[in-house]
Image (spheres, rainbow, N blue to C red):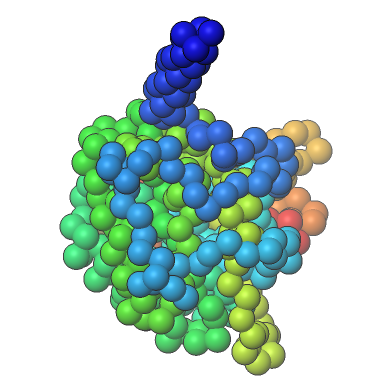
Length: 403
């Protein structure tokens, strides 16, 4: 009788051990752990936990944050702050931030995302445009103009593998200080650099950068008395540092709809709600798409007085290149053609010794913003093309918008 019991016990132990082995093997893949449900429909994702580790401390590539050391710095799980929390937030970053409004998860006015921008560009590049303004602004300048209650800033993807951690943090510090100087009432939250996945060249090198960046960003947040949002923990396998399957598109860089929804859910459930210390918010401009950029041809050095008639005749035509960016539906004439003279590409005559005018018009209900090659100018709705541009190309960038 005792031998039968012993045999059954040994069999049970063997089966249990084999089961745990199989489960352990399954957990070592790059799939999302069972305790993290990232399925998403529109703007909602299923509940996620702040602990997503599928690896023990012994085989982690991504180090765990010392929550005791950084208590009050790293945002921990809270009650869901709701959609209002997101609506009160200005999102600043690169193309992964821009994708929030692309997927209609945030409003364009509250989303300042610039494709391919690294942290250095946030301070030096005038890439944020507003209707009624004839120039672009840096991220810091835009913060002062938009006067947000809070900011969630996410940079690092375009620095990974190319910028040392020291240079990255030095630039990040300057950007944060500039934003604070521009608008001290805004609550600035530093978000973790998201992971990359298969499809990225030098994935291992860039992943190492991202891990080092995030560790240093926690320290920077503590230094500047700011908070850190560790949203990467729901996107990143701590055993490899790579993005979980389904979190990035085929290029391995850009976050999927599912990942973006998971991020927003994480923001709401790791919220930082402080008193709104802003005074009256006034004169807030409306964010517009960045106008298309082109390489322009410099003005040729021509001495018209020394040219004979034959030479001058050869310079009669100036090519006007129309480059159009449209917010909303492209304005059309009744016959279906583009609603400005010349179409997307055309040409105009250049009168010797004078100027030619190319009229640009918009359909009813539309306005437009125009950039032209340096040396040209707008006279009302007309483009003034100097005679010196004869025989050359002139670029005209027309951005239409709904009035």
